[in-house]
Image 1 (cartoon, rainbow, N blue to C red):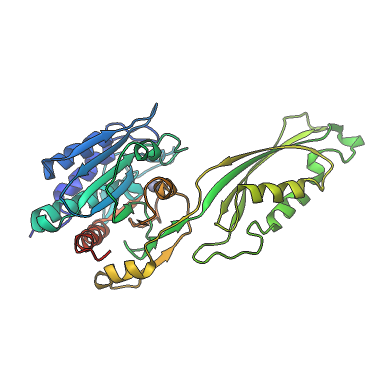
Image 2 (image 1 turned 30 degrees about the vertical axis):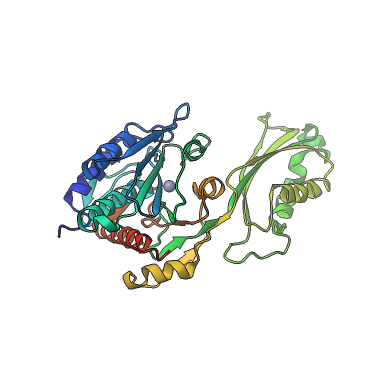
Length: 382
Ligand SMILES: [Zn+2]
């Protein structure tokens, strides 16, 4: 039996890393994946639902078995101006490290899934589930023309499980699986008073109050005292405080405050908006607020015990389940397709960093985990 993740798959990974698919550009990544799929499956249906500058593609292979969906993104964050040890858009080996932009987030997981599929078709053809692969080039940025375009367009025959290949793991693939995520809302608050000469200052200007206001906002319990099992509490982070440009002896009249709330199902945009309004009312400033709803919170209907039972034999270590971390496309899938979702991918430790890296061992382990899930799905153990 050839290794589940072999030199050919490494070459595929190298070719995929060579696509400079900086979000939301796809740069040929999805058609390259189509070429790889054609090498392992003769009959595959393709559906595309592109956005204005984004690519979204679904590949479907019907094996008259329950359906496993794999959702992934082909876009990566920019490599940045900082020094990489080599061109970030190629596979570089340095001792046991495999380096390249997007290798853990998440081109490596995509190739692991293809390697798992190839193994199933070669060695367990009758036990291979029907497979739907959903790919978008619009996940890392705003995500407004991404997976939702595909999801409203396609019919997936009651999927048994959706695997999102996001780098969910901490040290080794599978040591952490995401079974939900908090939501995300952004607020832009513009505060206004009047300008003053610094030598004759009054208190009707935002800088006079901003320190106290920020302290008050940080002290708010956005969850109103409610704890939701499995979810971390909602968190508040300031992303920008900026006054208008003035000469140095003028106190500016206006200030922009930007913040993000990662929120659990205990709260909502309406509740957060009320809490903010009550706080702003304490200050004699004019204010306008614009809210932007990002991801909504979701929680998988696959239980942690289910997954533990499925993967236990292949876990030498105790995996754990979590809903923390950034947002992913999981909320779109939960809203438009099914909540039978897990996120299982490589280690997130180097994601979005310079010299993003994984190891051949980790790629092999992740491929094995995907194979086990495929086998369990056709056994109808899930
Ligand atoms: Zn990602």
